[in-house]
Image (cartoon, rainbow, N blue to C red; front, top):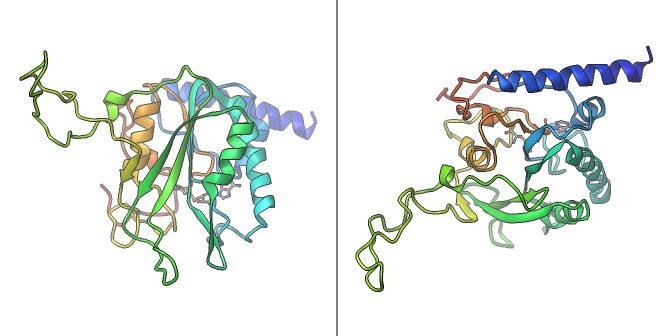
Length: 270
Ligand SMILES: C[S@@+](CC[C@H](N)C(=O)[O-])C[C@H]1O[C@@H](n2cnc3c(N)ncnc32)[C@H](O)[C@@H]1O
């Protein structure tokens, strides 16, 4: 049997296991290696309901052996995204969380660049979510950067969006209409309001309870909102650039405890 056939057989077996495990609401399946190699061996079947990630930003973090030229960096990611899309379910979503590339004080928002790629590949942008946080680098010659962006795309116009699962407390709970036919009736939604597209969620720095020694963790609250809104129980979520798998740290809708398979240990288990 050729090496490629063996690899592919391994990929099919792995996908079958992935589906079977998920159906049993079991612990997550972890591929320890590069996403490019994973995508090479799994079948081009639309198994993922949500692909959610924060890719390397090409800013010299310790897991980036070298910073590439921007065009090379984008070409690498374009190939991965191109290979991800056939694995996304027709009602599925992609959430791509990126920040800003800074060179000689000039900033380049990576979402500008990634949007071209997703658009050309036929995905539809539903929200450009601003994730605002309190800690980051200081600046003397421009305003401090205190937000990053989550690009939420769907594959089609028919997509899962469970707004009720992620409503937040209303600004004025108990507010009533003061005129018209509904005068006196509650005017807000009983489950709270739509969380809108600017999310204030502390980033995982310093003494944050979720902090490990990884330099750029997803906060659990951020990934949780995306998973609850964009998937249904039993759906498969894929993070192509996970290291800590934050979304495992809360109980997914299966209501099962999850395991963490990472060398990084949080400050405190919650
Ligand atoms: C911006 S961090 C995202 C971390 C993630 N949000 C978390 O909390 O685990 C990017 C991650 O991608 C991983 N990575 C870099 N290149 C990769 C590749 N080719 N395949 C898979 N993962 C990769 C790095 O190890 C790093 O942990």
